[in-house]
Length: 307
Ligand SMILES: [Zn+2]
Image (tube, rainbow, N blue to C red):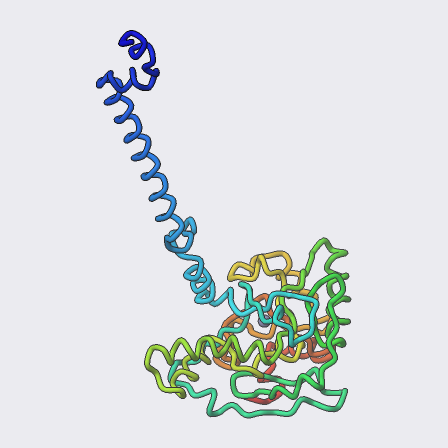
């Protein structure tokens, strides 16, 4: 009977009788549990961590801000073939735009006057917008926009036609004046400008102070030529300080006037235009005016006798 009982012991019974074997298995189980706990904890910490870092060590938001701070790369609307009211057009990407250079104490908002969009077809291309001269949102009703052929950028259809001629002429010389940023809606300009106003308000400045300071960094709505589609920023990738060293810039300097375009913000006219040198920003004024402006060495404000 006893013999039978002994034979009835299962392999498990025999295993538990061996204390050393039990101890080894217990240690192994504990080790596995510890390793699992370590990996799970690491995964949770990674998932709840900060924003991914860029190679420079800045967060994504900080990089955008840095690009915006760089005067040569801010303020452009991502080109989208859509209506001016769509959200897509409101998206911005880094690209050139006018950064005004007025002293922070200037009061361009208070002194800015609203001007009418020229209704007669003879002078539509001589409108002068700057920190002192703006159109209101209704000016957009007077503009007929067209896409520049082969691009997603729009201009006043008359300016777009001239740009296409200039583009083709440059292309035949092996120069590609790729449109980077043309028309930008009033509402987009307003939003971009408001971003800076809000930034100063958050720092404790009054509304007026915040607007004045914001105006030194970005054109208020209606004061940018982009708001009436009469200009083009050319070649995004080169739209920075070194654009003036490109063959495209040399070509434009030599030939743009033949197609009615002028360098709107020359290096030696910053005090008058209120905008820093922008070699990529070319403005349509018509062939005759462009020739006269180029030959005289005047900027648009001087040529038109306005401030
Ligand atoms: Zn521009």
